[in-house]
Image (cartoon, rainbow, N blue to C red; front, side):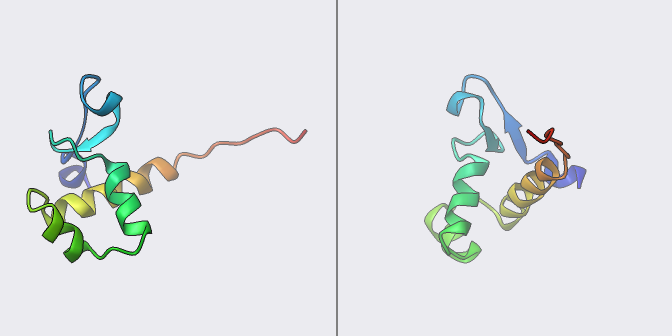
Length: 76
């Protein structure tokens, strides 16, 4: 997991501080959005040759770790 996590960087000067793949201007949200729209990893890699399969896995791992943080809301 740490290997995948090192592929994600956050720089306040890049993309408004969003989590990005390595120091590229491609955000985790971009990759997740493309996957959510039905693009395959192969299509994304063809469109963005600077990405690697490990980068896409890192985006998924990053999203999964963010989702794992439990937030409880008090009932109204």
